[in-house]
View 1: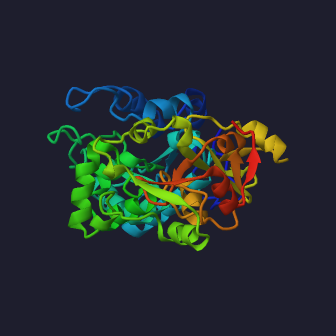
View 2: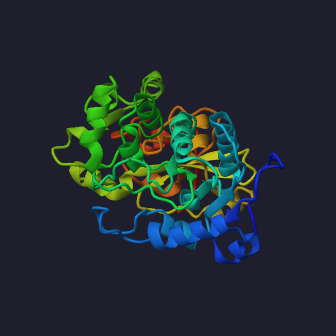
View 3: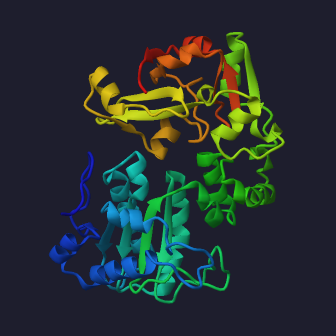
Length: 383
C-alpha cells in the first residue's frame, strides 16, 4: 500500500501516505489514522441536522472513499512553528500533485488529509490562511479542521461550524467551480479563481460572483461585460478573414444552464455545439486538443491505439493553464500554438459548429471546414 509518485523523488523523512481504507489502516496501525477513518465515515459521509441541506457533510468524501482516493499522512513532530508547518505543507502539495491519478475525472476524487496531532488549533488556522495563496493558483484548495471547531460558518446554515475533526489536520483537494463560495471574500484568491474558471460559476451562485467581481474591481470578467472573445482568438480569426459569428450566453432572454439550453436558443441541433478536450499521453510530454460534438464521447483507448501511444488521459487544470491558457469551460482549438488538433470527422457534415472562445459564456460559430483549416486539424472517427 502507500502512494505512487510520478517522475520525482521526495524527502525521505516525509511520512508514508496511506489510503484511508481498511487493509491499509491495519498495516499503518496508527491511532490518528484510525480516528480519521471513523470520522470520515461517520461524520463527513453522513447528513447532519444542522447542515442546512440534505446529503452528506462533504459531497466529495463518499466517492473518494469508494475509489480509495482519500489519503492520510501523519506529522507527529512537536514544537513546530508556522514556517515549519508551511514548509511541510508545500512538500505535501507537491506529493499530492504527483500522486496518481494526476488527471482526468478520477483525479477530482483525490484528497489528502495531513494530520498534525500535536499542533495547536490556532497554528492550524494560521497555516491554512497563509497557505491558501500558494495552493489556489495551482487549482487546489487547502482547508483547516480541528476539534474546536474552526469559527467558519456553514454555507447553508450560518449558525453551524462544520469544520470539526478529532485530529488537527489540513486537507488538500482539487478546486471545483462551486469553490467560489469559499474564495469570494478574498481579492487575491478570487482573482486566481477567475484565472482558472473565468466566470463559469454555477448559475445559482452568479449573483455572488458578480458582487465579488464588482467589489474587487474585476467586473469586466462578468459575462455581461465581455464584448468579445479572447483577444488572441479574435486576432487569429480576423487575420485570416474568415466568416464567423460571436454568440454571448447573456444575450439570451432565458438562463443558459447547459449546452442544450444554448442549442435550443439558437434553434440548432445539439451536435453543432462542440467541446474541446485537452488530453495528454501517459508519458506527460505529448498533448492533443480533441474537438467533437458536446453530446458525444471520445474513445480515448481506440484513439491512443491509432496514434501509436500507450494511453491518452485528460490533462490536469494546471497543465491546461500552462500549455493552453484558456479556462476549462471555454477551451477552443483556435490560437493554441504547437498543440496538435484532432477533429471528429462527423463535424464535417454540419453547416457550422460552435466552439469555445477563450472566455466563458461566449461561443464562436464557424464552418467546420474553416475551423479545421484554421487549426490545421487532422480528422479522426473518434466518437
